[in-house]
Structures are given as structure tokens and as C-alpha cells.
Image (tube, rainbow, N blue to C red):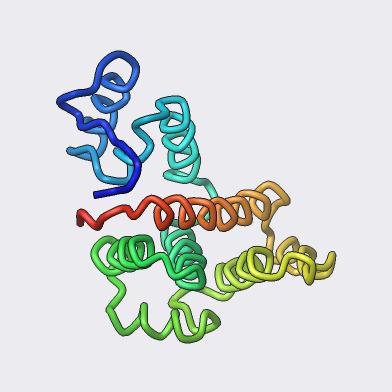
Length: 177
């Protein structure tokens, strides 16, 4: 049970009930991740919009984004997010548990093409040691045909994952997958 009050779908009214209906239509159920945001429907809508932005991103693949989330959360010790995103890599993207283990041990060995590995390593650097990022790091990604929008989107994804890790851990979200 999280240490913040949550509103179950059967008790939701108004805007929150409408949001839960949308979530159920998309995902089949209202997960603990949505319940955690239930005391602030506007924040839940913002979180859904954030997820929606990346769901069918033109350039950043589902695998790259799941790797970013897994490795950011790994560094932050957010077991909910590490396990959730690792299971996504395994169950949806056909990675083996060994592939995930190898990536967690050394991100340079992620089962991604070289272009995506470069983006992954950049995002990890930006999130972990932002003061060490230099113009040459960004230029490497541009030379790989990433746009500045792609670079910002990927970095934002990693940075927001850190925020989610903090929220999930602070309020003690329980695994429901």
C-alpha cells in the first residue's frame, strides 16, 4: 500500500473517473502507477500526455526508450521501474534476461544498433553528470542524423524517469505486474 492516499477506480468521480476510463480502454486496467497520481488528476493527465508523446515516437524506438528507463532507474535503485522496463524488453521486444543483465552491467553492450547506443550513452551521461556534457557530445548525435528535437526528447525522457523513480520510491508504489 502506498503511503499516499489513492483513489480506486470504483470510487473515482468526475475528471478522475473519466481518466480511469481512458486508461482502462488503453491498457485494460488501472495500474498502480496511475493510482499513485489519483489525488491529482491534472498531474495524471500530464503523465499520460508524456507517455503518449513517446509511445509512437518517429525516431526513438521502444527498445531505446525502455533501455533509457531501465538504466536510469537502475542507477536510482527504483526496483519497480527496473523490473517493469526489463520485463518490457523481454516480453514485448524479445530480449533475453541475459541481454538485459548484460546491458545493466555495461550499457555499451546494449542490444541496440550503434546509433541508438550512442543516444543511450549520451542520455545516461546527461542524466548522471549533466555538467560533463559538451557540444561535441551533441554533435556526435547530429552526425548520426539525430535532430536536436530527438536529442532533447531522449534526454527529457531520461530526466523525467529520474523524477518518476523519486515519486514511486518516496510513496512506496507496489509492483502489480
